[in-house]
Length: 198
Image (cartoon, rainbow, N blue to C red; front, side, top):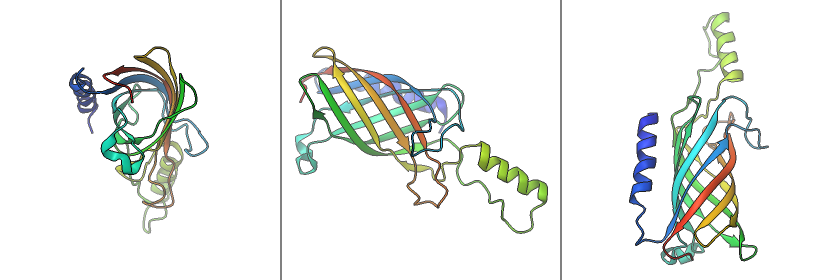
């Protein structure tokens, strides 16, 4: 997916967030491709700029525990992986101002997938070494569509503004093969709440 298309999606998200509806818009800066204990980390450089929207808790999805639906876009500042993700998140209040919010979704990305195997019969020794170097130095996410688990800890500064410490992970969960480096982003985002907060 082209970087311009991702930016256009993010801008259209922000423009469609009308005051009559209830929900949240957010934007933040993340450390990209971190070794978070699940992702291998350190294949890509740059920061990840993440922006998106989230609904309020939806009564229509009461059978799922009234989750919030999110749509977000991540753009890498150094030409690394860009992604678009959507999913569900559940908010649990620890106090009047502090909450935690786990979520799960699906993402599509524009990074590499399915490097050719270094064990393929008939390739030259030089090609074999090149393919091994690719596996060691470049991010191969293995599938164009990935799972997108995330977790946030939020603090309500005011009725409208919050700050969230957030973790976003992308991987195929070994459904597309045993090689699954994943990519993890950790950062801080500012959130503006519009309409009713439920």
